[in-house]
Image 1: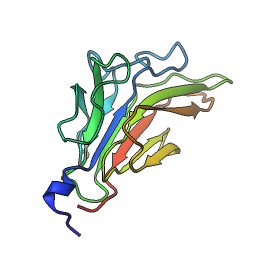
Image 2 (image 1 turned 135 degrees about the vertical axis):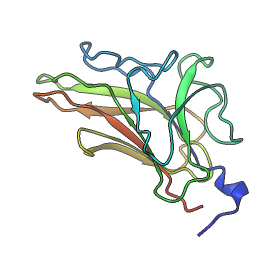
Image 3 (image 1 turned 180 degrees about the horizontal axis):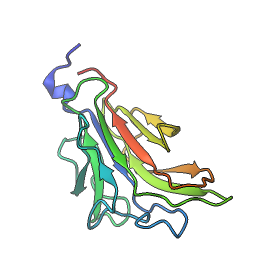
Amino acid sequence: MKMPSTISCLIYLAFSLSMIKADSSVPDFDCDFEASFCGWVVDQAGDIQWTRLSGPTPTPDTGPSSDHTSGKGYYIYTETGDMDYGATATLTSPSIPPLGVDGACVTFWYHMLGSYIGTLTVYNPVNNERWKKTGNQGNMWLQGNVWLEPSPSDTQLGSQARATTPR
């Protein structure tokens, strides 16, 4: 089913991993995206790409008007407006060293505003879903938390935005 292009361009999902906190030995894990993606890797083969941005998103009435930390900095987002149902944008963290018996809590901020918002999922290590939100969450940055269980070897954290409304 195709939606009129004036509506389909509103499918939007913004996600910020600013102020990530975990074990202090994890390199580049406290990231506000001010200078770069901080070692987070964008899956170039995905249907949709993550973009670093400062200021409001390009599509009116969607996404944040500024970043979460200072209001003048950067965040990352993905816009799914012209994508088919199921199109995805994937982001993978830098390697996380083995977590001891306490594990680690990862805190992140997300913003999901728009008429046709899809789904945001955080997972580890191999598509093990840890957190998920679908649909419009309002015009505000919200905090999410993911618990990483103790692990004897390196692991990673991933995030995936998915278009869930047919265009």
